[in-house]
Length: 260
Image (cartoon, rainbow, N blue to C red; front, side, top):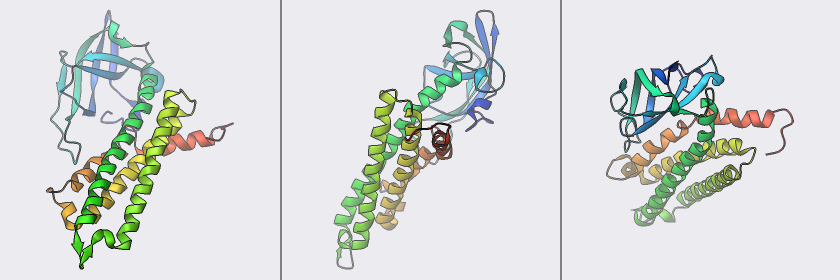
């Protein structure tokens, strides 16, 4: 991600100019997870013309001269790791640290995204499962109007919907992961479906769990507000869920497309 290149990743402006046995990097990246706490950076930079074909990938020492890190972003959630801007000013990178060939960068990034989408989907499912577990405990313990919350049919039905959607999301993620491992030609579409569905469901389950806690869910003494804050960004990371829908629909509408 760059200041002017988010979902339109192929429009990135960071450049890598060949200078003898080195490339010289100039530009900036933003919303970089772990920035300032890693030994190496995998940097996408433009070595050629406009579009995806002009992007190359480099392995860059994170402490190289000319690299500077912005402030740690004050985020809504995901505060267990830093997120910063990175600026590259005449950073010299040995030509041997080009990954693949010039122009391979976008393809390398896209290959990594399928697995990244499975990862984010799994994060959502795990957090939602914990939220569901906590909500179940709360319904069994909390009493109102002389009986446990778990004895109210309306809340039973809500819990049933939460667990049903969570199980469905988990199964879709497992299917997508299996297709990715097997090198299935439609693995990218399945990973997009899994990421879209699981992150939407994960956030919804956490939000419903907070509602079941009532006012207690909104205060930091209980974990629900953190689950909601942390899962919200999953619908943005590794490609927004709107981009996931674009990937899926393009696959469905492609000429000669077979049934998924």
